[in-house]
Image 1 (tube, helix red, strand yellow):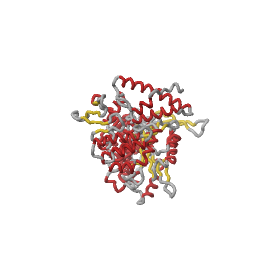
Image 2 (tube, helix red, strand yellow):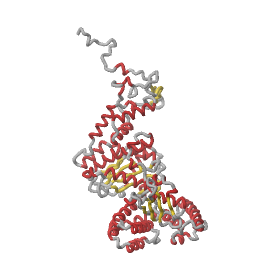
Image 3 (cartoon, helix red, strand yellow):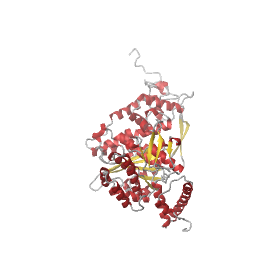
Image 4 (cartoon, helix red, strand yellow):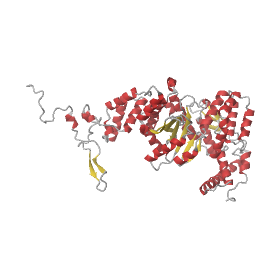
Length: 581
């Protein structure tokens, strides 16, 4: 022992590796005061919040070069927000080195460490990377047991669960903390929309998504509901739990409107839970009819005439209030289109009356949210229905895993990149903007609209100036365009742009949805309700309607507007609200 290798240090504290680097001289400290009147509460006052020394240099963490390799680099636990951020970046495919470099830039931008999250290390990221790499959707060979295990591990992300029994369907409502934040942020005084019955043919159980719309009018998924029955049948079971979850965080939260894409939704439960009005969204039926026509009918002239006629049926603007006559006329005129007629009779004829009655009783959403919902539909479809996952479609645990990991991370990255400017190159370039936003980028001068003949319009291509796309039935929800995107059955930017231009210039009749809504108001005024609030709203809307009609009459007298339908003229002729009230 004469070599002194085990001699105790003069400090008397023993040998501790890195001890000299743990005493950083950090000035961060606070005072705790016990409240005399409320002894179970304490007041924490920070005297210095930043982790810096007397010179102002950072202490601890990745910005302190002297702390590298010592315990001063570590913190007991990072926040859930940072964990969500790192896990999302890993699911998207960002490398460990890029995550660490990005985190260092963020901390450096703050000037010094402000909290424990500033002490994120490579080991932290490496551990989370290992979790992502080793994660599997199949927690058990049996799908039902696997789903129950996932629910047990992620209870804070489940706002409603009902296991399947002989009398009750399977229902699972999922909402992450980030989704809850987005629903509170964008849903308050905004719109919430349903995207229902997705994957009816391929998935074991259909998926329903609740969406909100950000400042760019892009749809963000804020809740997923998976149910073995139609989601519209059991909405009363889960929507109350979701509303309670939201108002626990923000009691003042209240949306302006709830958009339903299925007329079988029980609106009364939505009104009770969210305390807002309901609108009907027709994107689903429009898209289904359009895709079927393009597939089953080869003649483009017949396609556009049938599509226009289907719009008349849906909004009952062709044959007054008798929709049966319009359907019968449609089937007789296009009796030779056997393939589409068989599809129409089998798939839509049993429900067409329900759609028509809903359009008469509910306002119809504009093209703006419809474009955003359809855009979400396409993104969800591209992510889930990848052929490499075809063998997993019938497993619920795979659907849950895919939604809450990779797909969830895509929308997290969109928001984070838009707010901070980081990782813009990592975003999916094919899903940056929807058709509505793209339509706003088309200059008015690129739209060729013959106001004397509103049968068609042309829009110059933004990528090839020598090319112009043709639109038939311009200004209508059932307009048809010959661009490649529209020919796939999608709502294209050219249809939206022409509809916006027609509305602004007042060179076409109002949209079919507007005509139905106005007719409902006129009917309401002719049969006034007992509720004074409803009556006051109706009088206000109809007075504005009269002003619009007067403006349209002036344009028509000057030869700047095509005459409206005879049915509409006869309904509006001589009408005045003031003599009646």
